[in-house]
Length: 102
Image 1: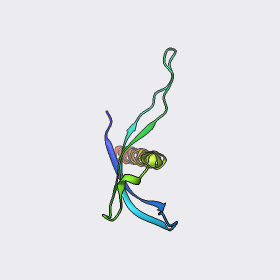
Image 2: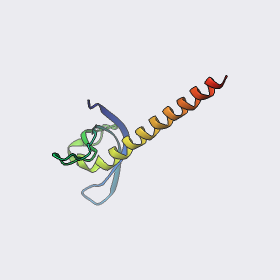
Image 3: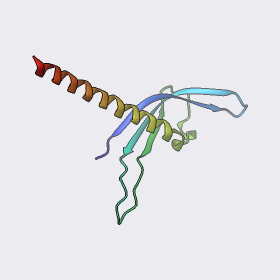
């Protein structure tokens, strides 16, 4: 089961006169869990599909955004989510073990 996730980041680009511009955008993506290789099928790495990039401010044309440019940032954001979840599970386990002592 895949679920869309989103986060806010800053997108930077150069306009037609060479000035650097930036805009806050909300990136929505779907994470696809990879699989290990078997004797029959090759393995697949984890991947993300960037669904949309929507400007938070209204003065930006979203048609000029390359969605694939955000794939690495989406993978990093999802890795942070997994690390946070693992840390919460470990903390809950430590708390449970501590309560068993009493």
